[in-house]
Image 1: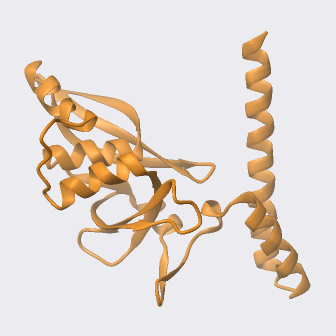
Image 2: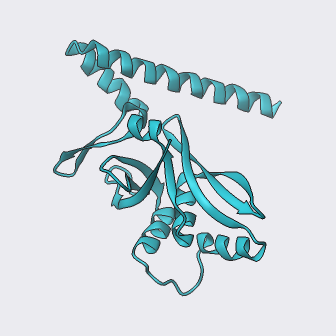
Image 3: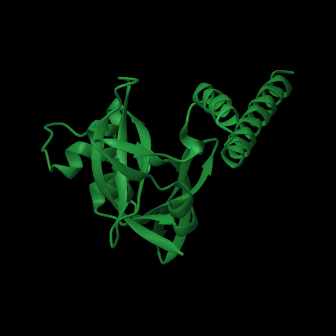
Length: 194
């Protein structure tokens, strides 16, 4: 089942100034997810949310007039999976009653959807699995899938020392999955270069 999202807020990432953190929340509820977005994409999203008028069109502003010129309409975007801690999205376009899906970075999909007032969805199981919890005071508890590998290794050491074995197992599984994915990526690159 799909859940409609709205933009919650755009926050600065204090650990890495090259990125901002985008908070998305369900339209008819309180669950939230967050993702890191580049500065350019964050600016594009923020200008749409705040209805700031830009003199010249930005890249994301060009999609609607180009697609409209060919009778293509963006129906909605959907965050449909998470791979190695990164959200992936689809743009659902319609032309002559036929739907086509195009893979897109989530930040780009959101920026484009906001430009044309298209609905933004996430699969409910992803929202439940990757939702963040507001701990108060500007702190959020995030799923392990979003932590950096170095942070996961440090957390694993602490969990073992504190005898929190269920958490340690979860952290270990995430670390192993990421290391395996990195290994596959290196092998694929080697095979491509041959």
